[in-house]
Amino acid sequence: SNTKKFHFNVEWKTITRLCNSKPVLTVNGKYPGPTITVNEGDNVQVTVTNKVAINTTIHWHGVRQVRSGWADGPAYITQCPIGGGKSYTYNFSVVDQRGTLWWHAHFSWQRASVYGAFIILPRMPFPFSLPILNPYIPLIFGEWWNEDVELVANEMMLYGGGPKTSDAYTINGLPGPLYPCSTKDTFIQTVVPGKTYLVRIINAALNDELFFAVENHSLIVVEIDGVYTKPFATTAVMIAPGQTTNVLLTADQVHHSSAMFVMAARPYLTSVFHFDNSTTIGFLKYQTNITPKIGKLEKIQPPMPPYTLPQNLPNLEDTLFATQFLNSLRSLGSKDYPCKVPKKIDKRVVTTIGLNLQDCPVNQTCKGFENKRFFASMNNQSFIRPSTSILESIYHNLSNGFSSDFPENPPFIFNYTGVNPVTENMNTNFGTKLLQLPYGTKLEVVLQDTNFLNPENHPIHVHGHNFFIVGRGFGNFDVAKDPLSYNLVDPPERNTVAVPVGGWAAIRLIADNPGVWFVHCHLEEHTSWGLAMGFVVKSGSEPSQCLLPPPSDLPAC
Ligand code: C2O
Image 1 (tube, rainbow, N blue to C red):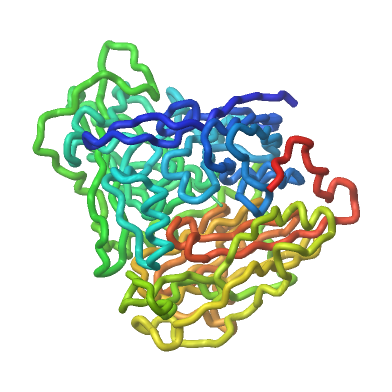
Image 2 (cartoon, rainbow, N blue to C red; image 1 turned 180 degrees about the horizontal axis):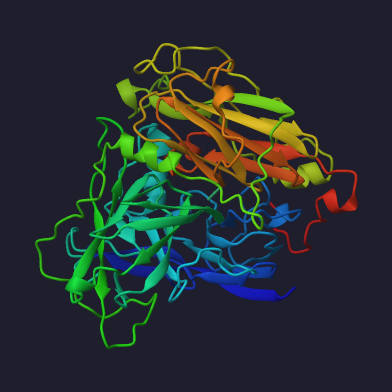
């Protein structure tokens, strides 16, 4: 296999958006960060040099890290952070994976600006018959804060209230002309009429699920989270933070070929908590007789206002669309790409996911609901990150930093579909509780949302493994009934699942990657409040089933 080397300097750079300038944490001065492109099977070595005075780590979101957990990146789970002035080389191979993934900082809220695309070009030809002009249009959604994001996060933790919302959503770092002072910061993609493009959509936003649509164009979904799907045509896409979606877009509106078409992304929120309902737009520009620079920002002016949002962009509260879209996703399940969902399981874990309220400590001000403070939990355990690396503890057969008693069932049952069951769901426990799994365990995890003061699906992300979403529904999970209607033929395979508000999702995976793997809500506010857990996969009996030894430059705490 080939080795591909990259160098990431984590450094401050002054960036201006919405006529507001501030120092932004970046990789190599870029916002968003550089795209990494590798080939399936490559060994990848990214040397990260921390040029700032605060700690950092980088996570390769969706890269399985088979036996190379040391390169996974979540701070205090698989490594101690990289201190100021220090370097660490993330060394891993991309084995049996292809498509669109991404990378981001995995320390505090740094991923607000430290993120980029991670693209694995396939070994075998692309399995869809449409001719593709250029397999390379990344559309990365993000959020921009005028304020320092770390201050927003710290204030949230200090007072236990929800964070201030971002000032803009962005497409490839650009807010677009619906935001103040932003017409010059608009993403415009040129396309050649009649051609088909592979568009790689990544939701890197901190806290919001998004709908995305392009005026007058339908999109054909062919891949999610770096796994091919059965192609299906859709008028719009629903994408949660942490997820990626590849779509084919054909520039087929040739009858008005000088036109510019609006592309738009705005949040999906299920209820009255419309804390942020603004919209980022960019444009698709049909270009004739000029050689297009694909994937590059063209110095083309956006059209004059007013701007009309695409009719096919779902409304803020369109749960029907979101549900139908997610239910349409299926593994490709072809001869070359079989669906490997476990038909039988060794263990089922049922866990609540959701928010909690704690009483405000005396003499303190709290800004959560009813003057209390927010936390979040899985089975009423709020995850606390230790101050040492759990993976190092495990590798050296130590147990410092964690305990192995993550509860495998909810501590008590209540009606999760009820409206704000405040009394049942007040308190949470704090700790670093992990689940221990023998190598090769076929695991099912049922994620039950508690429907508590939360308008968004919880996008639950699992490190080190892909999983299959075998079931998803509203209401309370019924262990006697719901497993009977699981899809065990072609369920979607991904690394981040949007668990519906007031509902549940059942995922299955084969725990065949030795190490410790973080599981958490990819809404950054919820992770900070403790909506996370971890599981340990023990090494197997074969040498090929064991975690590799730690690299010599692994940072110390
Ligand atoms: Cu994309 Cu643990 O993260």
